[in-house]
Length: 477
Image 1 (cartoon, rainbow, N blue to C red):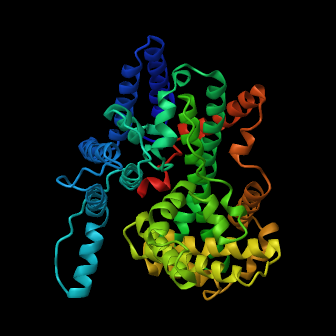
Image 2: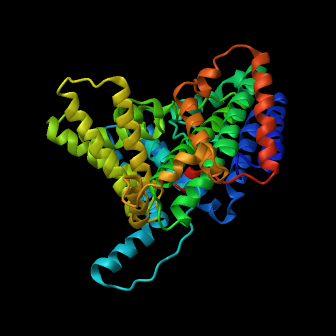
C-alpha cells in the first residue's frame, strides 16, 4: 500500500487511527497494540500476502534470540549452554542468509555462470517488500541485546517495533530504545491534537514532494535513462539532474510522510533526511542523507571493522569496505557496488584531504560535492554500465552539444527545454534557499499548519486523483 494512494489516505490511515485510539479510550491498551500490529501487517500484506509468513517467522526468530541474549547478559553460568556470542553469530547469519537468498541469489547465479561458464537456472524470486529494512533493524536489535542494551519486552511489543507501518517499508531504521518506550507511555495512548495537526502538516509536505515534484522529474529521468539511445550534452545533464532531484524529493517525501503518519499516533520517528544537497563535503552529505542507514553502517559495520583505531591505512580500508556493503545493500547489481565504491573512495579522499588542513571556499566545496553526488547517482539509477556510460558520455560532451539551445527563449520549438530549465532552477532554489520541512514544522502557529496543510493536500490530492502517483524508489531496496 502506497502512502501516496487514495486507499491509504482516505481509508487505511483514518480507520487505523480512530480504532486504535478508541480501543485505548476504552482502556483496552493491549487490544489497541494488537490492532496496530494487525493493521501494520495488513498494510504490508497489501502488496503480496504470500510474504506475510516470511516477516512473521523473521520476527519470531529474532525475538527468541534477542530475548535469550538480553536475559543472559553478564551471566557467567552458561558453560553447558550455547554462548551468547555464538547465538548472536547464528542470529546475524540467519538474517543475512534470508536477505541473501531472496535479494542476491540470482545475482550470485549470474556471476557464477559468467565466471565458470555454468548454466545454472535463475530462481526468479520476487523481492519481499521491506526485507532490507526489517533485516537491518532486527540485526541491530540482536547486537544491542548482546551488549545488554535492551530490556525484556513481550512479543506483541516487539512485533509492533518491527512492523509499525509508517517506518516498515523504507525506514527509518530504528532502534528498540527509540520506539518501544514510546508505545509504553500512557500519555501516548491519548489523542494529542497538536501532534495530529503537526503530523498532517508534515505528511502533506511529503505528499506534495512525492506526487507533484518527484513524479514530475521521474518522467524526464525515465525518458533519458531508459528510452533515448544517445544523449547530447544538454539532454544528458537534464537526465542526470532529473534523477538527482527525483530521488531527493522521492525519499525526502517518504521520510516526511513516515514522520507525519507516526506523529498521528504520538510516535516520533528519528530524522532521516536533512537537506543533504546543501552539504559541502561528502562526509557532511552522509550525515544528512538516509541518516539512520548511515548510523547503522557506522555502528554495526565500520566500528566493528576497527573504525579509525587502526591507523590511516586501516581506516581508509574500513571506509571503503563499509560503503561497498552499503552499495550492495541497495541492490543486487554491479552498478550499485560501483556506486558504493565511488562513495567509499570519496570518503577516503576526504579523510586524506582533511589532514592537509586546507579549507576550500564554501561555494567551490559545494559545487564539487554536488557534482560528485550527481555523477554517482547515474550509476545508482542506470540498469547497466552501458546505460550509465551513455549518460556520462553525453554529460562530458562526447556526443556533441546542441548549440541551437540558444534559441530556447525565442523559439516555441524549445518549450520542453525551457520548461526543464525552469524546473531545474526552481528546484535548486528550493533545496538550497528554503528551509526543509522539519524546520518549517518548528513553527508553533496552528493556523499556519492548517492553512499550509490544506493548500498542499489539495494540490497533491488533485495529482493523485488524476492517477499521477507511483511507488517510492526506496521500496525497491
